[in-house]
Amino acid sequence: MTAGSRAHPASRFAAPLAGRFFLPALALAVALTPAGCRSVAPPELPSDGAPGAMLPPAPPFAAEPTIRVGVAWGDTSVALASGDRWWIHESGSSRPIAVVDSEPGWRVVRLPFETALRLRRPDGWLSQPHLGPVQAASLGGAPIEAAGVAYPGAIEVSLRSDGTLTAVNVVPLETYLEGVVSRELGRPGPDVRAAQLAQAVAARTYALKRMGSRAELGFDVYGSVLDQAYLGVPGPADSLAVQAVRATRGEVLLYNGYLIDAYYHSTCGGHTARVEETFDGPPAPYLTAVSDQRPDGGYWCQGSRYFRWTASWTAEELDATVSRNLPTLLPLPADGIGTLVDLDLESSTSEGRALAMRVTTTTGRFLVLQNAIRTLFADSAGHILRSTQFLFRPERVGTRLTGLSLVGGGWGHGVGMCQVGAMGRASAGWDYHRILSAYYPGTDVRELY
Image (cartoon, rainbow, N blue to C red; front, side, top):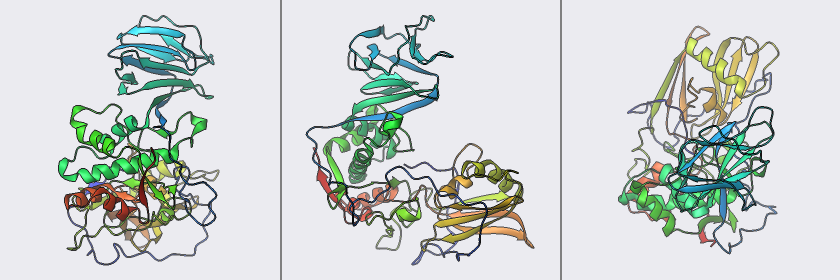
């Protein structure tokens, strides 16, 4: 939930912070061809509790649910291991394919031209083909490793229609959350325990909201920033995060009785974002713009090193960046992307988040919208722009674009809870209910199980 690019942090911002964070750009009525691109939002954009919503309110659970977490995908083999004795079997069957005594080097593989799974031993022995999925688990309660990462629960490996494998961690929800809160909020210390409690409730709500949403992929949530960053098995230094999950067991955020889409991000930069201005979906009353300003005029998240940052490009660097990233965002004309001619900010929100970026090349004019703007500026390593909250400062000689600087604030999409802001509020004595109410206005904390 918090991924971003490695833009250069700046110690100061270039404009005073009073009222609105940035001055908005004027919207231009320009016909663009081909059609532009909207940012890709997570499935099930929030509409809960909105007028006319037909979904039933969230029911209480009779027991803690099990969640399926996608932890590896896209390869033709998955390495499995454990520090204990473990076994692997076809899902739904108790007949073992193999029982392994802590021996490293075992893999689930798909051989060329086969449409089945096999287990490969370190010495090259192959099991009979299995249509799968297959499931591996420790016999003594130790973690099971998949692709070098230790996970609680079991690992299920399935074969997808494109011939690649997907590894899924099948684990009790609360155990999964211990690995999420440990990774998402890090190890901030006991003075911000309320922020860890708030993170636990938000992460639990987000996970429950996603249950069953990706059945076609074989799991509920990605074990990465595509959904929530997931550590797997927490270490001894993560004890405070584990305690926060256990102290809030079963607690979730509801709006009018419905589970909310509990988005969160690292650093809002002074103001959170409205969901409809960030992702391609309807508004939600609990995902609106919230000021992160303190009573003394400072900001709760200003302790973040990404509270203010700058990023800059020469004309040549901009051309290379746009040429690399624009094709991933929208269809291009038959003669390709061409050479960059101009780049301009077409519109932004009243808080200064970019809504539309106009890209002009020798083959056409393109519009990139909302959170996809961050991907437009991704570097060669794939690190996207810190946020869409920035001052746009082009450098021109006449009408020719010679460079660009962005002076920005925050890290992440900006929707929902600001994690660094939550830690700032916790340090000031706020409890976790108050923190959650500030970032998700109108919601209630309730215990589902």
